[in-house]
Length: 199
Image 1 (cartoon, helix red, strand yellow):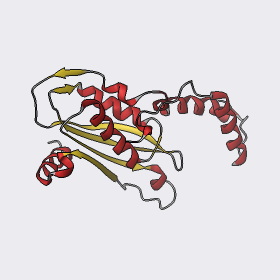
Image 2 (tube, rainbow, N blue to C red):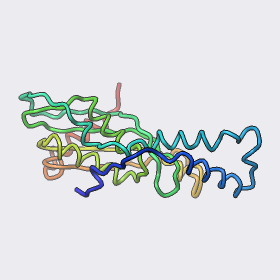
Image 3 (cartoon, rainbow, N blue to C red):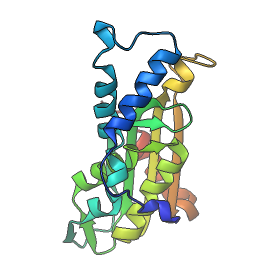
Image 4 (tube, rainbow, N blue to C red):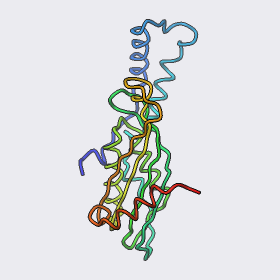
């Protein structure tokens, strides 16, 4: 696990700097930032970035702070967790769903906490592959389960609205820990649960 797993930034967003930068971008593409429709755009963009990059100022591990003692040693699945993140290569959104599973050893966490840890990692400049690994490693570090599986599926606008322009393309990534990584039967079972469609 790298230090980026728990890294957070102190302080708030410098909205004045973002406003200035957005104004410069508008001018650079040939727009008039003082026309009626664009006058408040720099401020709106600054507020948006404060929201979508809010994960930079939170500790994702702190989201997994609620435990319950429970003698349950089967798979716990929380799936179809919606998320929005920002591709760090083009600063364009990628949007999708996260599916998580773990096998507890003597303690379980609140199921909403798994959704919160997904959000904490999503709300920062990201790549899907790293985000998948970070979520899995956070669950391992804090809950100390027997196994963890995380699958993310997302559509990347940096691929659908620019470049190759392939709308409908889905990117899937997975991270397996513990017996989900080492035992083929356990991995097959958890993947069937994670990818099963609702009736």
